Structures are given as structure tokens and as C-alpha cells.
Length: 150
Length: 317
Image 1 (spheres, each protein chain N blue to C red):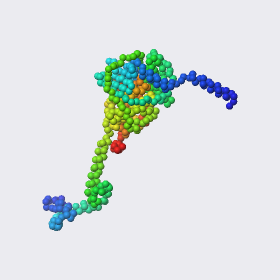
Image 2: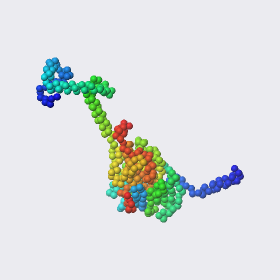
Image 3: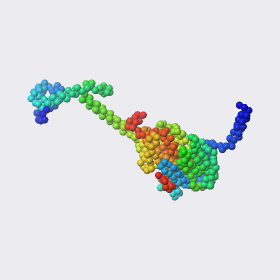
Image 4: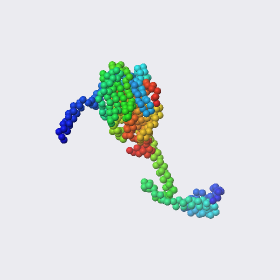
């Protein structure tokens, strides 16, 4: 394959249409005449034929049933791959959305007496707790200086 | 059986019948209830010291108490201003600048009594005649209570570890048996806790060891608080769908229990444990001695954050 490639003098996209048999007869003859005398376009033609042959040689994959009913059975593999990539992307997006919805939830920052208040209120209904209701927080009490508070 | 044997058996039976009434009879549970009933109605004032030997050192505090009309007023003695008032399902904290928070429980059931009560032993405490009772459970003495004979007030309470050593002591250091002056006209808007019947059953088991679930309340919007008692010791269990953060609790320490790691801190007379579970954030707050803490935690959801897939699945459950 040549490294030089003059522009506007070659077939370009016409090579693909030529391979697909999409050119009208007059255009097709002109393309064949050009290819006969142009190394660059023959190289393009050879490369494109090689790629197409490799793609045709790849195994056919089974589409999921839910996609199969909507997709033509004869979609070439490279187009199927696009579909699969799209489906995978959609699945990942859905999982991420679910994960966001299922986040760990609210974080409740504790300062110290949230529990004491409710526990103390409930405990004050129990006779065996009455009279020995314990101090709620040192904030409200004079702490004894015992020297060993850890 | 010979005649001699029959005679000996009859003598033994008669002797047993005669001796039994002379043995000191254990006080019935109803007697303990009447002690507590008198204590709740007693009118007195005095100073109280509370000291607990926790695994992380001594936790102790002192306060001035006054009880009247079934409400216990507790203050730190600063300007004589009340800091806490409690009674009949209400607990209010009044701050130094007049700010106040309060909680009122609007429903409750009677706690079970799961202790054997010893006969009252007459003792002298603060130069006053008093009755000392020992509460035993599982064959071990766990509580000693000293009630004033004159007023019925609870003068001293000792809770014991499983090895018989003292865990916490609550003692009146001075006692005045007259109707105390108490603050009046302080009205506090109480936040009410209402009973909740739609709570996760796996988070609030009916029984945890010897503790029974007495009631469950709505708490902190979409959380719940369950109250448990074994007849003497009690704890509240908290659950939220999210997580608790303890970054503002300076003395919270990581403690490793049988099932995993917990954040734990002690205050005079109380312990608090906080942990994450697959069901959400949980916390336990109560007056449990250390060995009972471990037994209770063994019956609750284990520490561990919910996995990514647990959270996804929770959306569909």
C-alpha cells in the first residue's frame, strides 16, 4: 500500500458503493476503468474487501428474544454489535439510576442527648426507673473530679 | 418401712412445717412494686452522686434532686436552675439561656418483672432507717436497692456486674424529707412520641435474651425507637433507614463485639452503642452493665453496611 495519496483524483466513497453493487452501469464502468489504472484505489478496494470478508467470517450471535422480534434477522454483525453496545449502555444507566435511588439514605449526626431524651421520657413511665433516672449529659451536671475519668 | 422410720419421717415433716414460717420470707414481686410506688410518690430533695466503673474508666457526676407531685427535678446546682425534669412519660431539658427541649411519650405498657426479690434487710443510711433489697436473676445478684423507711424515697441503688462487682452506684449524699420548692410556670412544648405499629420486625425482636419489647414509637421522621426491659434494666433501640454519624461525639470509641465493630461511649449511668446494619443505622442506649450489653447485641442485627446489590434489592422488597 502506498503512503502517498493525492486527493480528488481517486474514487473515495465510490469504492464502497462499487463493492455493494449500488452504482449505475455507466458509473460502474467508469470506476472499473479507473481502478485498472490506479494503484491507490485498487489498494482501497483490496482493504475494503478484506475487512468485509473478516466480518462475514465472524460467528452469528443470538439476540435476546425481546430484541429479536423488533430487529431484522439478517442484520450484519457489526450493526448488531452497535445494538448490543447500546443495550449494555442502557442497562448500565438503569443500574446506576437504581443505585442512586437506593442510596444509603439520610445520615443522622448525633450530638449526644438525642437518645437520652427519648429513653428518659419512656423510662420515666417505669416505676423501677423512677428515682434513679440517671443524668443525661455531663453538660447539665457537675462532674465529680475523681481524677480517673477516661 | 419400719415403725422407727415412719416415726422419724413424721417428726421431720412436723419439724419442717414448724420451721418454714420462721425462715426469712423472700419479698414478693408485689412488695417491690409497692416500694417503687412509694418511691415515685415521695417528696424530698437532696444531692446525689452517680458513679459507674466502665471498661474505659470511671464515669461519674453529681446533681441536686427535688421530687414533688411525681416529677423529678434534676439540676447541676448552677444558680439553682432546673436542668432536667422527668416524670409521667415526660422529660424536658431546660438550658441556661431558657432554651428547652422536651419529649413526651403518649403510650406505654407496664414492664415485666423478671427478678427474684430478697427479704428486706433493715439498714441505716444517712442516719435514717432504711430497707435494703437485693434483686437476683439467673442465680446472680444484680441490683441492691435502699429505700428510706420514712418517705419511701430511693436513697441508694447499686447495679452489679455478673461477677458481683459494682457497675454503677447512685447514692444520695444529703437528704431532706420535706416538700421541696420546685420551679413553676416553666412551660415547654414537648415533642410527642406516638406508638408505631409498622416497624421492621427483624430490627425489633419481641424478645432479646431476658429483655422484652414493650413498645415501639416513631422517631426522627422515618425512624423508630423500641423500648425494652427485663424488669429492672432497660434500653431503647433506635433504627433509621440511613446511617448515624458519631463524628461529633468526642469520646466515642470503636469497640469490637462478637458480631463486629460498634461505636460505643459511656456516660454516668448509661451506655450508647451505634452501628450500621444491612437494615440501616442502629443505636442502643440504656443502663445495661457490660455483660448484659454483649448478650443483648448478640440478639440484634450484626454490624455491616448494606452492599450495593442489597440496596438495589431493597427497592423491590
